[in-house]
Length: 244
Image 1 (tube, one colour):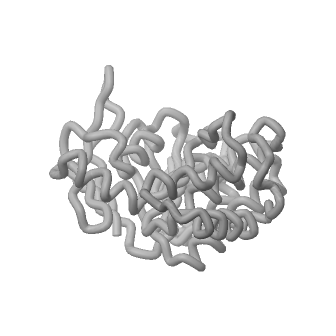
Image 2 (cartoon, rainbow, N blue to C red; image 1 turned 120 degrees about the horizontal axis):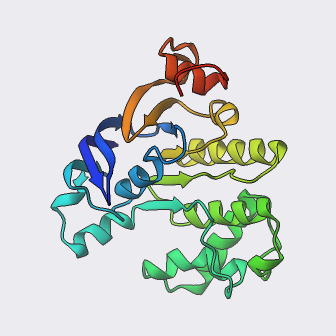
């Protein structure tokens, strides 16, 4: 379970303003909103990569702001994350990229690492790509390698930042379907940021909408689709005329 209570974060100006939300265990939660509304910053707070000025973030039963660096790293080891730009290491092969989180967590059995990498590549339909370099992959293939790396540790919580950004509609839907299938198989709690609202809503259980650093909507996918809130309605249905 993920619980956020009255979370605020600022850089030069406020980015998150008094955000509270609850993501039940085993839920696939979609986070939407215009650019620069605070979505990616909120995701990084959930991952323990950023600390808030006010409020609290609880992940896997631990309040992140109360932890020292060693304890915080132990919680991070229970979280998988796909960054917006994939963050693959250009100098490492696909195999080495996917194995990286395992090695960081102290897994040293090479046969186990090889088996888990092969399992993840098969899951994302990239079996046989172990020795490829990231520079030789298409955008969709890089995304799938990123998904394999984010899920290879069998994390309890997985965070995805724009998993389908820059992809064509068909590939985008395949990525969302893959992520939903992964979540159902693992039972992980997932938070997914995406600008591809139409396809995102085909896989989510719950949805939150950010605007100017505030969470202005939090509800089921059906509630988002039928919401009469003018901003939510405009954004979810892609209406041109409206308050945004």
